[in-house]
Amino acid sequence: MEQGTDRQFGVLRSLDWWTVGIYISLLAFGWISVCGASYDFGEPDIFSLSTRSGMQIVWIVTSIGLGFVLLMLDNRFYDTFAYIIYAALLLLLFATIFNPHSIKGSRSWLVLGSLRLQPAEFAKFATALAIAKLMSAYDFNIHRRKDFLIACSIIFAPMLFIIAQNETGSALVYLSFFLMLYREGMPGSVLFTGVAMVIYFVVGVRYADVPLLETPASVGKFAVMSLIQLFSAGMVYIYCKNRKQAWNIILLSVGITMAAFLLSKYVVPFDIVIIQIITTVAIACRLAYRALSTRIRNYLYISLFVIGSIGFFYSADLILSKMQSHQRTRINVLLGLQDDLKGAGYNVHQSEIAIGSGGLKGKGFRNGTQTKLKFVPEQDTDFIFCTVGEEEGFLGCAFVLSMFLALILRLIKLAERQPFKFGRIYGYCVLSIFLFHLFINVGMVLGLTPVIGIPLPFFSYGGSSLWGFTILLFVFLRIDAARNMARK
Image (cartoon, rainbow, N blue to C red; front, side, top):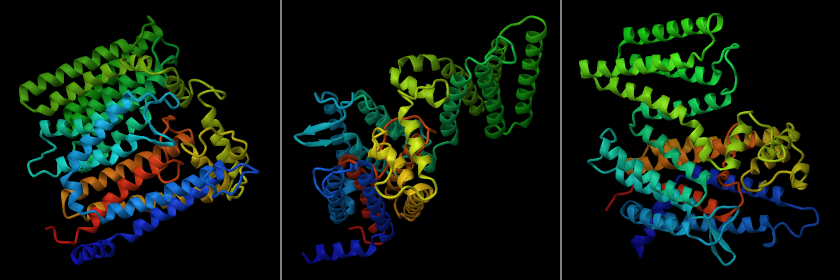
């Protein structure tokens, strides 16, 4: 008993209290925001359990209690049972697919009487534990194809189950784990490929119907094909160290494209993108031949990147057709292709009005007109940041973002000081998840990112998200607290 007590005091002494202080501050400011967003004139006491602000206090208190329990567990528990926890959450996610309760078109909630839980929120920490366990193994090598594919399968498995629950937004959060993979040695080309796909999709869709200087060509397709050619030249220069070959690709692409453009504009009008495609395929074939003749694999990989880029771009229409109508509308609104202020664009438009009306100092606690009159849907959950902007103004938003910045910087410091790979990898998983939630949630409130319906950590109302983020953070704090303690 005495040994257990000593261990508990050792944990508390080694605990990073700066991070705990930031966590408590975010919870407090988050409760104030929930109170402001959900308060109605004439409502009973804000501490009443019949109000959302009162229930949020329950979630906060239970979260703090949950965090304390996690700190009291042996740090080796998380390493030892990582795969078991992951398997249990996968099973729960799979069972949730067949859940008879549908909430706002999603089957991602388990309803237990008056209690509703969302397993996807808890699967994040389970996935982080599992991938940390895998990658901390002695024989794991991220540059080995088999090991990399196993790591990706751990990430994609919960994503597929969550998508099957019709909860695409929560599933996309798991892509944040690739930031951790990049930190742990994943080739930058993999991350660049993902970024390039996003650029192709946005540019191609946004300017698909814009003619190129009164020619039959589309600005979107022309720009994407030009980017593919430019990216291929850059990759040859960086990964193959062949400056001459890179310049040859650029000069060939520009020369043929300019000749085709002049011919189309002044002689015979035709779609010059066809010439660009032929040129790009020829470049890919040349790179493949170069790979065979020099036995340098990077040329082959760049060739596959070029062909894959063309295939992905021309499959964008298929991707859009597979999306639900409201998802396509949200993308069109975000890209400025459609104004739907009474439909898909309503939430973002009203949140922008709310934030703009707050000015520098805001309208004061519980004095926001947009929130009091319920103009902003989901204003105490997904769009709670607009409440901060309206009631606390620019200064309040800056303060909240500075607290999140402090948390992010602290997590980086904690992750880098871990003596074991398991702790470092798990720490960067936590960091990546928080970054994704912060950027996407604030971005969608400001109209900068698509509305995918994910909560703002420690601010959005609800027990599942608050417990999920608390588990993520406090498991890492417990692992960090053991960094100077003997592992028995």
